[in-house]
Length: 193
Image 1: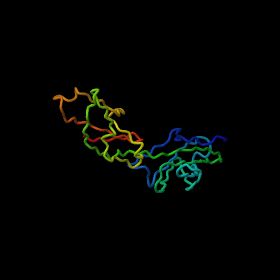
Image 2 (image 1 turned 120 degrees about the vertical axis):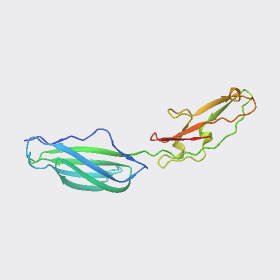
Image 3 (image 1 turned 180 degrees about the vertical axis):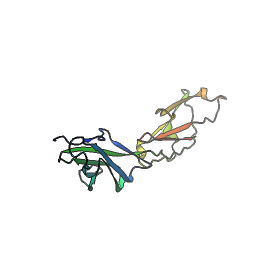
Image 4 (image 1 turned 45 degrees about the vertical axis):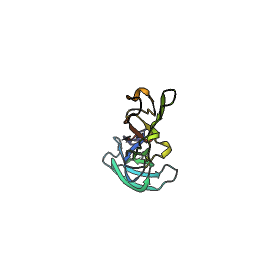
C-alpha cells in the first residue's frame, strides 16, 4: 500500500473563529482522515504544528492518535493562526494539510451621536455628512479612522442634502435622523440625533 490517508477537512478558505473582540484566548484545532487500505484497524498517527499569527514561528507542536483528532490551543491575544497537520497510516504513508484560522470580530461598534443645528445656504440646500453627528463612536477592533458612517442600515449612505422643502414652516424645524456606524467586519449599530 502506497496510498496515504485522506484528510477530509482541509478547507481552502479560512476557518472562522467568531469572537466578541479582536482576539481569542484559546481555540480548538481539529482534523479528520480516513484510510481504507493499510492498517485499517490501527489508529492514524497525527503530528501538528501551530504558528500563532501566521508569522513563520511555530509556537505549539504535538502528536495525536485517531481518525478524528482535536486539541485546544491556549494562546492569549490570538487573531489568526496557521496549523500544519501530518497524518501517518499503519504502512507509514503520510498525508499533509495546512489550515488557516482567523478570528472574526462579531461585536458592533459603540455608537454615540450628537444633535446638530444647520443653516440652509443661499442656494437653498445644505449637505450634511453622517459622520458630522458622531460624538465619539468607537470599536474594539476597527481604528476610529476606519469606521464608516451612514444614514442607512443597508448600505453606506454617507451624506444627505437638506433643502428648504425640509423646513415646513420656512423658519426652523427639528429633523430626526438615525446614524449607522459600521466597523471593518461589517458589524453595525445606530443612534438617533
